[in-house]
Amino acid sequence: MNLDRVLSLRRKLHEDLTLQLSHCSPEGQNFPDFVNIVAQLLPKKVSREALNVTLRPLAGVVLTDPVIDDLSWRLAGNLKLLLSGRPILPWCGLTKPEWVHAIILEAWPQSQWVQVSKEKQLARGSQDRVERPGGRVLLRVCTGPPAGQTFMPFWSWAFVRHYRIILGFARFDREYIRGDPGPRPYSPLRDWRELTRLRIKVLAEPVEDSFTLCEANFIEIAEDAGCRRHNRNLLEQRRRPPTGLQRFNCPLNYSLDEVPCYRCEAGYDRCPAACHPRTYSRGLCCKCHRQSWFDPANPEKCVDCRK
Image (cartoon, rainbow, N blue to C red; front, side, top):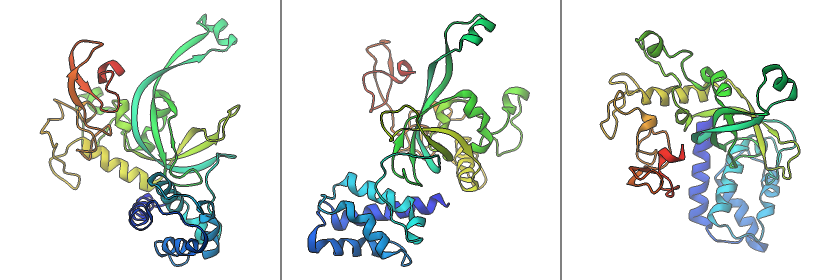
């Protein structure tokens, strides 16, 4: 699965459908015209009958931006189904494990308290709960039935370290162990926020004992050549090499020793190598009473207090 093509098709569908059909309501005699407009944006081999069934749930629905966005993801992320003559119905939840491609939109460190079994309590003399270090990741699924949906699973540090090579990171931190980073490419995993904007192929499975099917556990990451190539290029940019194909100059002119990317205030609305979505703003924190950086999406606490 070429994720670049999926993202390119999704962008094209969203822009053209917004331009032609924004706030329209396809119904009655207008519905065939709606199907024709969508068909012109897809490959010619797409089954018209399958596309008709796919778009039927939108009959009489006002095509607002969220509706168009959901439709664009659904069509782009499941194009193979349409090409094979199978319709893409609106996602209602996972009923079986699915391998999907996803983008990590944001990542932040967080600990989780987990229950310890009675056997381990007796063997180790530990408490009934232990703190497991790790963090949350905001995932945007790009392919498969849940294409376009976002999830926020907790991953432990042990889980991420286990898959660090598949994600594109170096096996060891050579600079920390030997004092010499060695030849490039070289990108050790040093901070949880470095997971931001990485692409992954991940196994999603339904959550047992859940009140809704719209939840999922992401339990395994698989090797994917396209994702790994994208991740290595991004991580190499964050190392700011002065030469080579991935040559990158920091927009704020920070040196790597002074401010690594995961400590920089620039978001990826301003810098392509950033480790968070929005550029931080400076202000006085009411909790720690210091001049600190604030995420515009969370103005009640500074970035340091949120950690």
